[in-house]
Image 1: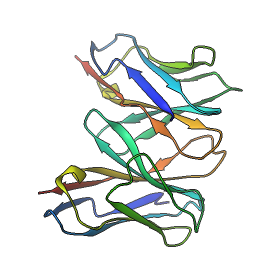
Image 2: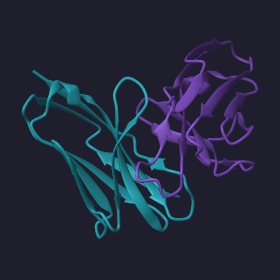
Image 3: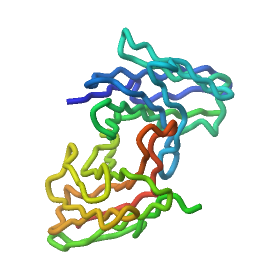
Length: 111
Length: 113
């Protein structure tokens, strides 16, 4: 059974701080790892990482995949209050088009 | 471009009542999914449909049934609702090989009393 573990479960930081969110996984025949941001409603896509693309960056957000350690990190620099959300990590196996999600990390950015 | 549309957005049921959650996508995706989200549990897969005409159980299928009516629509039915089914339900769709993973609907908040 595929498994995704995220840490920490919850995090409170001050605006301007840098944060690192962690995701470790066990999956049959790994195809991809995805990061989503969830504010009040549906999760929205951030990054997809595959064997051929192990680092992605978009503005203040970046993510790295470590296939040897079966893990990924999501970095957010110069955090803003608008970064407050739940960040979800998910993995996709190569055998089926379904994602297994972690429990998420709840990030709160305070002034 | 509507993406994935779920109805209703909110629902309160009494224990034992039945209801169907509707989901439709207009992106011509082959695969569709139903997840539930509970506090501290993340998103858990209930059922999925890899293509029109096929459905498969996910991690937590008990108490639910699904119908892939056509390529666009994938419904989730609760035959006899229980308080343990109080949750937020998300429908999603995807296309194999898509670089952006799933597209999610806006969710249905269901309370069973």
